[in-house]
Structure formats: C-alpha cells, structure tokens
View 1 (cartoon, rainbow, N blue to C red):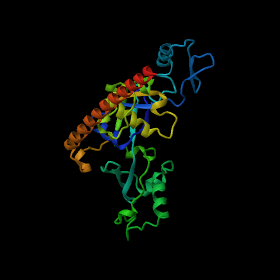
View 2 (view 1 turned 30 degrees about the vertical axis):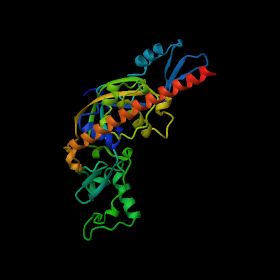
View 3 (view 1 turned 90 degrees about the vertical axis):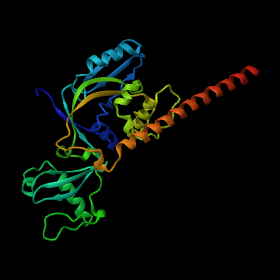
View 4 (view 1 turned 135 degrees about the vertical axis):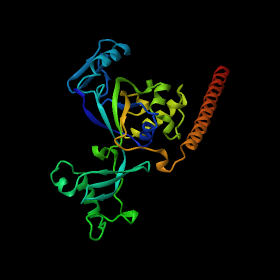
Length: 306
C-alpha cells in the first residue's frame, strides 16, 4: 500500500466490542485546535501552519472551507487508506521471558497469547520499554518468581499486573486493525441518529441523562458516552466542539479470533435487555417533553393572568 501510514487510536472496551460485533464503523475525535470567532465576528482556525479563515458570518462557507483545507492536510489524524491499530485497556496475565510468550487480558474479559520477544531479543530492542516497565512494577510490588523459572508467579490473583490505560498498549498486543475509508469534519452536535448508531451505541451503557434537545435515544446515549470520554476536556457535548469523523472498516482482528462467549456473556440476552432499556429511556424522554410542555403552558397562563 503506497503512501499509507499506520497509527493508533484508543477505544473503550464498549467501543471495541461494538467494532468486533460489526456495529461500530465511525469514530469521532475533537480537533486539537478548535475554530473560534475572531474580532470581526468571522470563523477562524489554525493548527500547525494550516489556516482557514472565511470573511463571512455564515457557518456554511467556513464549514466548506474546512472540508477543503483541513481534511487531507498534515494535521488530519488519518487519510483515506491509512491503517489504524486499536489500543484498549489491558494487562499481561502471564509472561515467560525465556521463550517470549505473553498472555494479554483485555478489559472485556477476553485474553490471547502472543509470541513476543525472548529475553535475548529484548536486549536488542531498546526502544520497547513495555516489558521492562511491567517487570519493574512487579519487582517494586514484591511479586515472587516461579522457582527455577524465569517468570513471575501469578498464582495469587492479587499479584497480577495492574490494568494499563489504552494509550500504553504496544502495537504487538493490539487485536484489531482498521482502515480509514472516509474523513470529514463536523460539530459533534450534528451527529445524526444514523451516525450515533454507527458509533456503536447499542453496546454503550444506557445510563444517559435526558437532554432538553430534540434528540433520538441513540443520540442521547452517544452524547453521554462522549461526555464520559471527554469529561476532563473543554470539548464536552454542551460546548459543541468541532470533531474529525473517521469512518473505517475492519482489516483483520490482528490474528486473534474474537467470540462474545469468550467473555462469559449471553449476547442475545444482552441485546434483549438493552432493547428494553432503550424503550424505557424513550418512554421517559417522551414523558419529560410532555412535562416541559405542560410547565410552559402553566407559565403562559400565569403570565396572561397577570
């Protein structure tokens, strides 16, 4: 493949399950530099010497200019055809340094074994600090080694390595390889119902607060998921940030075959339960809108009476 790159993205366990089930084909990430209204009241954006400025107070000319200039530029996270390897929360649950076999557990309960590097090969790969970081953590915690073997003893579950954030996952431990099929820019609140479904919302937690916006249940669930991921940033749903929209397809499950039952789940029953939760949430949403309407009518009657 010519002029393509391979870069990582970090997904939650719910997002990974949605990809593996074929239910997630889109991924949104905020622009690192957000557009702003300049002193003349016009939209403007600049990131790493790529600049977009339109002398119009209408949003559409600026949006069109962003599509032309930003998408495909050097600041875009991906280009069509680029390979994307998925990082996720994980931990090694066995590591035989003498023969290079490591077993990785993912947050959803699935695990897989990889032929990594032997102890001798690790010495010739100084840029890979992952095994050294894991070993140092276990040494600092006083985790014992298996007598007569060059491996740590994880017979006590409390001695297992700590869970590692998705961003710490090395390339060789990734179980998903994707390919970017389309890139565009939009504002996050422009995520349609169909787009929210393509984000994999059927696999997300349904504990979403209702919003006083004309949103579908899928959009409400996605908006809550967005806020959960970005609660420490200035790009929450309420601020309506500009985002990159990456559409993708699965190239391969990185030589790891995935089965829902491997995590000890009854997938069909989960879907039934999830649909029921969605129906309940939709019913609550309708009731809330009716209550808001009644409250407004009461306020109008009081205002007219005065």
